[in-house]
Length: 269
Image (cartoon, one colour):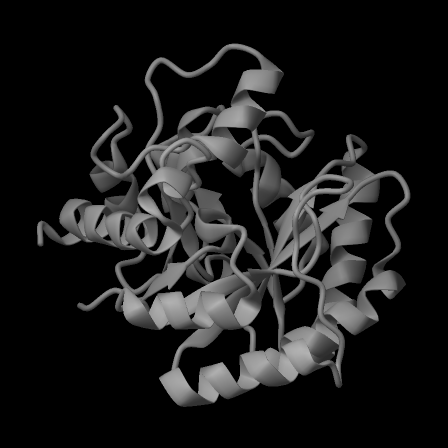
């Protein structure tokens, strides 16, 4: 079965949404991601509004290339979370034809986290968007079991668990946790490689994840094993930032390298 590949925004973070669509097309990817909101306060992102020239340009590039927008980033559920605050975000997502929203769990109280995730799913549903909770080892929702507990507790049809290879291998997550996930809870997965053994501090974990991931096959993570337990038809988002290599190679060349390395590991191509 042929896999669907999507180029994640973080791989070429400086690229605008229309540039994301074009580089995905140029590298043979069927889709791309778009970061409309920052991962941390003041972080890089590409805001758009309905009716803006940037949205119109992005839609024109989508029509011209046939590349889809797979996912939107990033909503963080934390202390001041309000699901009603994301209406404009969802409207842009619907205008782009996006399918999924990447969600991080910063709320330590399981009950509040579950209720807020359910509210977010309800707010996103009219726009045809799923909400995909990505466990990150430095966050309260740190592992696949943590995310599964929240998503199943919220019990929304558009709620999913997003498995990111780097976070999977650096958290208390196991292949059996992925095998136990109902297929309806998996909408896409993210691939990269990383150093083994992993960094030991929170700061190093965050730096690696946001700034210095490795190409598939360069690190020591069992990527073939992980993707063997994920559904074979699951779209694969290629999320491999490198603040040291990408600017030197050029982001176009870096994007091509990430796609080629991913295909080599998953297809032996």
